Length: 382
Image 1 (cartoon, helix red, strand yellow):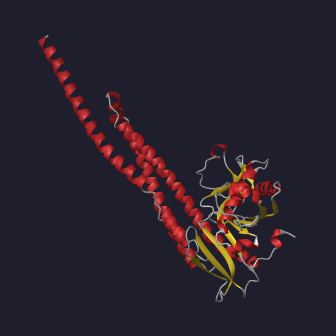
Image 2 (cartoon, one colour):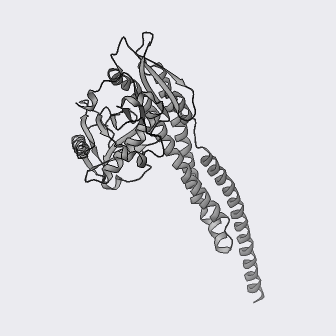
Image 3 (cartoon, helix red, strand yellow):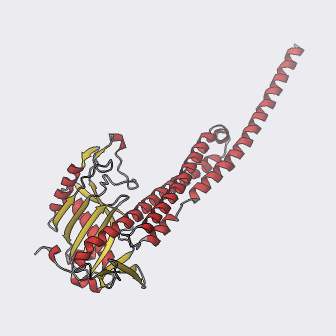
């Protein structure tokens, strides 16, 4: 019997942001190439079964051909996008993480009831990919902390197995993966709606209980396919908000470094340092100021984008808004300190440099005048 043939009345699951990329970055490939290589990579692992990859037939610039110049292919942990991000593509598979590996990959989490069998359903949402990892063991639904543990186990185990194999593909991640909540899907009275949910108070990660309508769904296995469509929309927005935060955070680090370099060069001692400060630091200050202004614009643009997305989700019928609070929290993180420090430093140092330059010009004029006077006196005396 296939693992996914098991019928569950209730199940624990977790959410993360996972994606498949090439180990060796490529400058040109089609999505058919990529999908074939991902499928072959997964099928090469004995622990993975029932792999399915579906690319939508819709023609979209984000899901047809991936093509970049060689100098545009970068391998950096701070990249903005996964390569590729084929919107609408769905990847699903069953994976077994044997108990003997739990201690190695669970990061200290208890795994007594999580089981060994998991279902991964990954969909590339419009804004970011979203993976839902479902526990297929009946025991997992009796423990309210197994959803996030399942994401950790699968993420670490699968990444390790792919990296240490001849597979062409690797697993890439955006944190937090797991999303900081444990989900439990169980039957209940949804009052005519497909799903209702509530947060159960406890220490640690949030515990979110989602009840499915027994009038609309036969069991949790039946309800999960519909629930995934609800969750992908909002978690796609959440993880894109997180990625924008990471980008602004790294930009802030760059601004701190540039500001520190400018301050260091502006406080150096000696005649040569004074000359460089007066006549050469203006270009550095201008570069820092422009970078800070660009970062400031990005902050405002990202905040506007997040507000628009949250408003759209609020108006959607097929959204539960289980990630609304966390999305709002991330949207409020502006990382504006680096911008403020940079602009303040530029203003202060430019004012100081201008005054030093004026003093230098005045001193030079006085010196030139004195020399000219001395020369004139010599000539007159001769």
